[in-house]
Length: 93
Image (cartoon, rainbow, N blue to C red; front, side):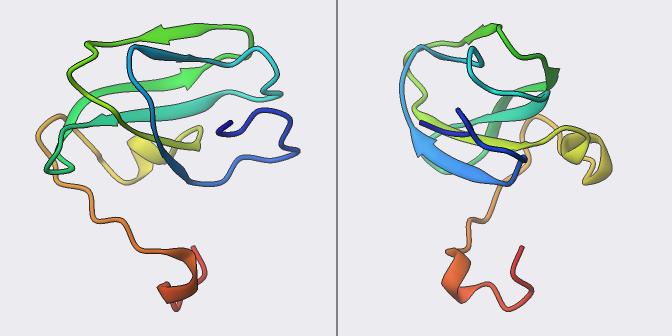
């Protein structure tokens, strides 16, 4: 479900192919599409509510982020993303 019906944006990782929509998301988000090695293959920044974002079905790893995070963290195609489960993340982010 990603950030659908959430009151605020926070990082979410999930698997899906083809695309996502933001029909019940109340705010813009940034999105990363990752390959099987968690390298960024596609990004979108500021995806507005009520939109559809599609990509090649070869990729299934998706990260939704608060808008501005891709720019703030300087994430670009080819970067490797390291996912840390929330319970293991000492900073709570």
